Length: 503
Image (cartoon, rainbow, N blue to C red; front, side, top):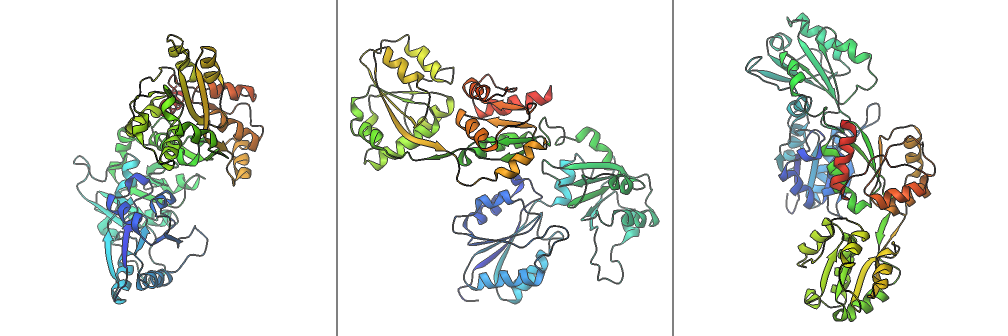
């Protein structure tokens, strides 16, 4: 069709965002329209450009869904209008994903399309449960079949007799028909004592695996409230290997629920660290970083930047807002030539160095006190200091430098405020119900705003703080900090949380 767009049938993988292919990510980043299913992890939508139109066409069990005919019509409509469409489907689009049906519809409508294979749940979910599909001591064959055949069929098209002779059989979407499918398999000749495992929400931190045999797996699942769709069933001797290959569910934070209160734009890295250890994260930003009401003080300092001997940066935010304001005022890094730079924390120093700014001092103690210890051994009388930082911050650093005889200008470069819209009610319920294993704070402002919004929490709630200043604020608010790293970084905080649960 003339001037039509392209439809990309993309496999999103089974759920873990890290299993999306590089090609899939690249297409998502430039797609005009994204059409996605229930089994697609919404975290992947972060790759969409701001102008992209995002359409949900999936369903939850028991709810009405868009029909395949309606989905086909959507793809045709947007492509015909010249839009590039990313059709995002769980797993692989050609493995029980109806990708073939959509390709047929697009071909009939003369729409250009491409297939972007995905990591199929048939292999990846068992792998996350520590179950290989093949093993030379067990089997050299496997089959993948639907556990939920089209109910409109008069007769089954599944070759049960052939399946009974195959070493490993993977059933997709088989929870509802689990008992019936196992009876058919035994009737076809499968030994009822053959190991079996059912895995629900595979590759997510909510993953649950139940093992048994062909004879009793349905009974075991029936007794569990935490097993349901989406689920995969694996039948075969390879299931026994889970005892030695269960790598994912043994991570120190597996299934632990961690509440992250960092600002939205800074939470992603911390969330990735926690989830790499198996945690289930809930992001609830309690502060938002924004421009101060006025840049008057900072602008005056930038105008006279050459008069300063030192610029002290106390955070990554201070670096980014200062450099942006430097650019806005028509200046560049050449203005900083000859001025010594100090930074609190490795991340702050790294941010400066990435921008091409050399750092003279980074104290071992990532607090204002660390810089004070260093400057107390130096003659700073008469030296001029600029500290671009948050509008509200501790005064210990500028006050101490002034007592040493230094001339100090504190310039608000940004401020932290509570976010405009937050689902406080649901967070209160989660806390009250004890559905949080760890509550994390990475600054005093995140802690203060959290308690201002949520109020009192159970005294036995485990609280993790990035360092002693934040822990001190939490103590002032009436709570104890159980987890705190020796080094005041999110990497160290994540490790400390893991070590807490390993104990």
